[in-house]
Image 1 (cartoon, rainbow, N blue to C red):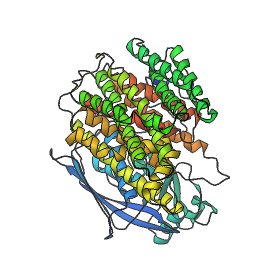
Image 2 (cartoon, rainbow, N blue to C red; image 1 turned 120 degrees about the vertical axis):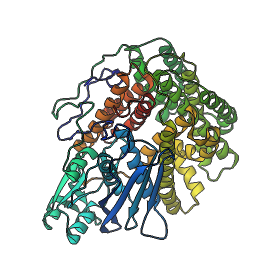
Image 3 (cartoon, rainbow, N blue to C red; image 1 turned 90 degrees about the horizontal axis):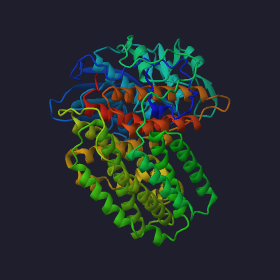
Image 4 (cartoon, one colour; image 1 turned 135 degrees about the vertical axis):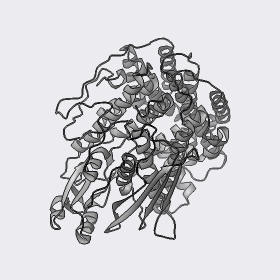
Length: 597
């Protein structure tokens, strides 16, 4: 496989493919027009509710909306409505299936559960069910799957597997239970370590670990997914290769990197808190090293991260009034940029890559500045002031990034198609982002409010002040309606950028809150490496498909480079970094008309 320069960044990947079962083919459907072959399917659903496991069923239908737009109807056998976590898991499953296959966004889905559940555990089986409908295959009886799903198709660990397997044993009718990679040994509700294979054997069942929905699909349908459009290397204990084979263009992009690095360095001159300043200086040094080594794309992504860290370090020394004084100006400037980007007419895929990067940065600048204004004007907790200060600092940094990218000259390669359903893609991502945000607020913010004995607004301020990633997600949710007014009906490049950042920022934040702690005597490193390998292979394949059009897409390649570096630095959480480059690359594939080829 041809590897991108962004994935290399002069580092040797230590990820191992052994046992990953990477069989999936990006963009290979049975119909060339991306319509669904099947119409209805039923899949078993395993989940845990408290200390009890449940084996239930889900009925899935999918049909062409014939231009009427995307619709997702989720129902449960409960009058209280569908739980936000279930809604988010279902939307992520639809997002993953659409992005991986290139299925038409204007599809009408229904998902009917015969029970009420409040867990991401049905996400993976929902995605497999959608794939089975798309490829016209049947789900074999006697196979069940539990696991959360990521936008790039990896299966994440879930809680309550011991109880779920016990429920399957009690109910009968199941021969094989598929669980996320690394979860054969789990904790039960009492905190005891349980071997799921041994537990399943008491009912004559077996447990099989799967790393991605491709492997799960093969077991559940008895068929492999279509031959790979982008062949993956065979399973091997050898490190993934990293090789640069695309020439770097060091012109205007290099100058933009230099300007961002210079501004970050200047910000750090006033930073005195080592807890903030030292990580910022390390990030700045890493970005500078990439720049000096000619890795301009990777250097840009690293420079923007370093600039954010430097802005936070510098803002900690400034009085709150001074730190938030220009939030209104930043918001107005970001809004002006979004309005201008909405009117842009990119002529190449590289142009669109830049437009989307500018739009996502401008969206964040707008939302963060609005958040800073709101927290300053109407503080709801002692944490409101630090939350406002942090939001204002990140808003200024995001605005500088947006201005730097929007000022780059047009050009590059890769053709755009005129009939791409980008409105549908934007609608999908926007609504998936809303579902993820609602799930985050209903679980994390509500839990913090209950734990601290405060209202949800005060709890939000405390969470936002403590976690910049959560702050970004919360700010985007708060500014959602204002942003949609600037780009209504999911139409235009600004709307696509708003939807893109709204989903890619909140999805990893929500996933982080659903992480499952393995038993103390279990090494989770191998399972984490397998999920990273899935993310890496699918994202590199997605970026390589864009390269085949003649585009270089420096910003999505830079994001991929940063994800690779982060995965090596923190393997346990490294796969989350691939969400932005993968989703962006697949959005660009729709724009180029190569989402299914």
